[in-house]
Image (cartoon, rainbow over all chains, first blue to last red; front, side):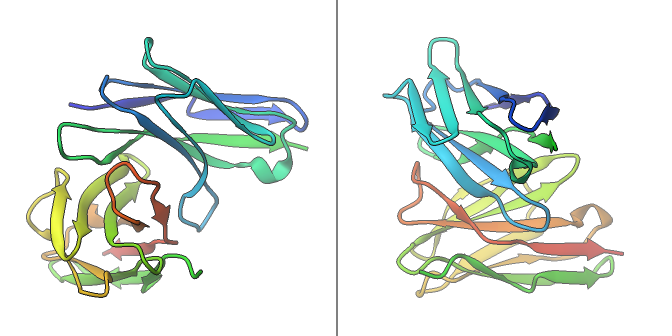
Length: 113
Length: 113
């Protein structure tokens, strides 16, 4: 079935450094890839997304890249700050007429001050 | 605009009982999706409702059911609760569903004793 793999499961970086989280997907027809940030006690919040007709998208310190040939996409956070500490989830979308999100297993990011 | 709201935020039940959770989507959104989040399984899709009809369904037993009302509010019900049903239940709304961006509520944390 459809699957999204996410790595690493935990990531610790020093404040000011960059963080990169990678996801691979199995459904070649998948064409929408959102990233969510989940803080403790809250629901996931959309931080950035990308569609398959675009290779890269940036929003201030956050960027997402997509390689459709290799079926992987990555989240890049530059100049990390303590408030970036959270769990990040990537998602792909299944196709075949039953569109739904398939989430990765999450990455716990810790930004050390 | 108000975000997605879920009630109650916390619930404690015992095995064998049933539970009903409620979700109010963002005004104007017609699609509501439900997810179960556990440490071991991550975010798993339960079902999606659109215009009062279940449009997609995940791989959960029939004890998990839902419905949507004409005002797009949705409820999910879990009957004959099991210990393994302890989880954070999240709902997400979007305008039309499908590959559109989903916005999550804060979730209902269910503990089954």
